[in-house]
Length: 272
Image (cartoon, rainbow, N blue to C red; front, side, top):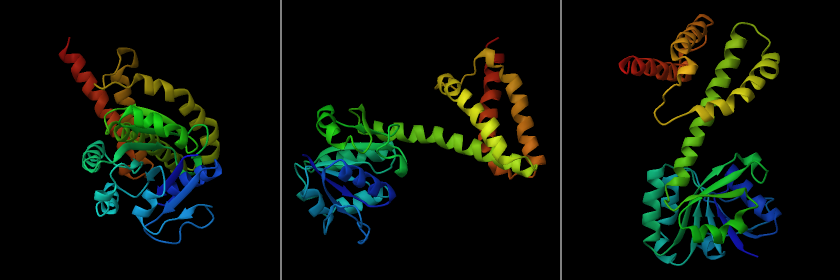
């Protein structure tokens, strides 16, 4: 049985630790603020170094890149040969720079991105992206699988963070659209729950795969989607929102798509 340490017991760190404990792993935990380990059924380490040295794999899940560096910098010279998996949210640049820095001390290192929220950890739809040496991924994947399905993103340490950031961008686009839709219906006195269940949910379910499949690096809009018509419709949506008294900042997602449509129209006219 692989021994695993979790550094960081925020909501996500606790969920990861609990999943490993429930799977029967020998788990050690550490948190910068003591007292967050209650009820986990894991050992508690007095320091980050003790936690890392206690296990075959150390999983880091802290607030941000700066907190990871702050935690590891004082002990990095003592970590040669240790296997660290960093699942802390950060940018692709930060992931690459951190990997270069920590592997310089002889650490065996994988970067990661958690494609789950705490309450979906260990459920069927959850997965975690890992990037770095493939042999390290193959080594840790079976042990870390109870947290979420392991998925290798590539040798480049920045790819897990890159894919994580890009996927989160898609998610927050949905978040912005859903919140604006609900706010708009509420502002006009509509039945919010009926709209949510009978209109918004089935519409989003129908359109999600179409939107994902149609997205391109260039942002080009296929002729059959009629960018001119969509531009007019988008402007009408923005105007309707203002007329309903919804804050202008809530329509940022609509303005972004309107810009895409207008650019597509301009490109099409230049290419005639």
